[in-house]
Length: 232
Image 1 (cartoon, one colour):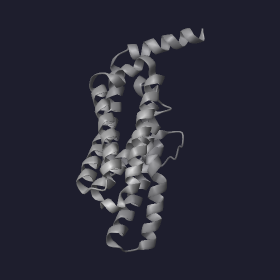
Image 2 (cartoon, rainbow, N blue to C red; image 1 turned 180 degrees about the vertical axis):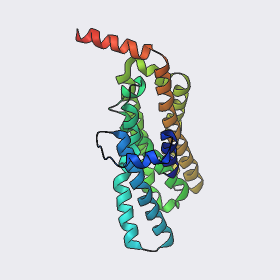
Image 3 (cartoon, rainbow, N blue to C red; image 1 turned 60 degrees about the horizontal axis):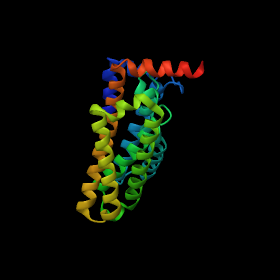
Image 4 (cartoon, rainbow, N blue to C red; image 1 turned 60 degrees about the vertical axis):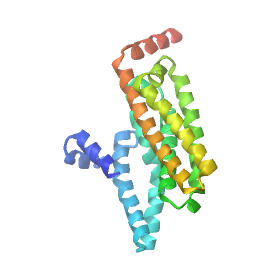
């Protein structure tokens, strides 16, 4: 979360601009909501972790954990909303599905991290979540490609296609290994790393698809012409 805040401040150019964004609370602006989420979730998650590790201030730790748990789903999905709220064809055309794809990807990553770090006796919930995340990610990706039509080429070809295919393979393999062999430490570690890598490939793949669709005018012009023909 600290790296995310640093990246946002870097994009804005000056740290003061990040503080200025917190002067406004605008629910219809993904950037405004993202700034507030970063500012609220990071300290809550950090406090929850500190209390859990040290064993001190258990009530404060419980409050911080609850706050982080409530904000977590929004943190996991707001970047999908932010990307789709643009004119980039590969993102905007998938505005209905992209937040769900990011949620599934985040769940896979969280499951993978739990499998890597937690004792195997504590990982059954993560193993179940990994299986659900893999199924959800595959279903949402298929829905995106159906909705995008011609623009779906940017999701299937080039760098984006390679990354997204790799993501599907890693996520499916990680979820299967976690479900079948997750009670073994070596298998849990391998499946967790596969899930983490698959989640990263999903994010970079979606980013690459957006860049590819923005570079080629046909992905903007052709769908617009088809839409006008359909309404005329």
